[in-house]
Amino acid sequence: MYKTSMFDYLITKIHEAPFRSKPFKHVHIDDFFSKEDFKAITCNSEITIKECFTDRELFSQLFQNNYQVISFPGCTTDYNEYISKRSKGESLKSHTACESAGIVLRLQPRTSILIALNEFLASEEFNSAIAAKFGIDFNSCNIDGGIQKYLDGYEISPHPDIRKKAATFMVNINPDKDSESRNHHTHYLKFKPDYSYIEDFWTENQDAERQWVPWEWCTTEFMQTTNNSIVLFSPSNNTMHGVKAEYDHLSTQRTQLYGNLWYSCDETLYTPSWEQLAVEDFRKPNRNISLLKNLFRPISEFGRSAVKRFTVNDPNIKDRGY
Figure 1 (cartoon, rainbow, N blue to C red):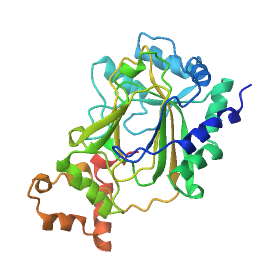
Figure 2: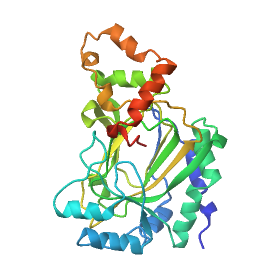
Figure 3: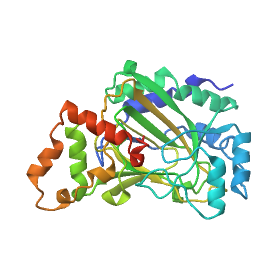
Figure 4: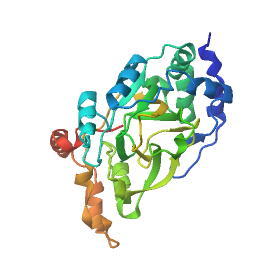
């Protein structure tokens, strides 16, 4: 029988890991699990789904193994529509900065080791260690996370995460030995110089929600392709990351341990979309500094209310993003 405490060594690894600064402050640990634990996790029948020939067969297998479709950014929850669209060679869309949408499923484990792992991911010990690493008040946060599979088409364009998110982590537990070469990994990015003013805008306007932006506004600095690696960070105005999954999910699926700490309160007042932030004058070498200052100047209480009423009704920004 596996016990939650068997994973306590992971907390020590987080405590001892150094911070990396590029492209933003984060922790990256390779060989996160011991070889024995990682093999036991990835060879588990709930992780290694047998190869399928159709999308409908895949969903049948996932449901039989106690995976459930969840609401998730960059995704639809209507798996029947997802199957239908794919059978016609069509893509779903969830956001104007993206080309496609996928499906994310979360496991409700039945086997002993994955039950213990799931309980560990939700434990106060593990999550308070993450909070302490980033100087976050754990008592002001809620815990969310689990074991997840992300199917083909899943896309979330570059974004820094919304302000209510206090911390996030992602662990690659892909069962396929060739997973590192597949096109479904997380990109860690930074703004191109022409679009760096957006980071400044988010910094100067703390009550403005952060949003997804088009891929062409950023450059990828590295990708988390390594299996059994974890990346952790506390979202800020420069923590740009994104995923665009284009791969054969019938043979294997992108699989992660994924979790967040969420602040209990959301103090944002308005949500400018990327379209509203695409200001041509700011991309020129001789930027109009006075116009730039006007954009960054905190807006009045009346203005905040007006912008909030406008943006919450904008269909292009319905999904505020993770």
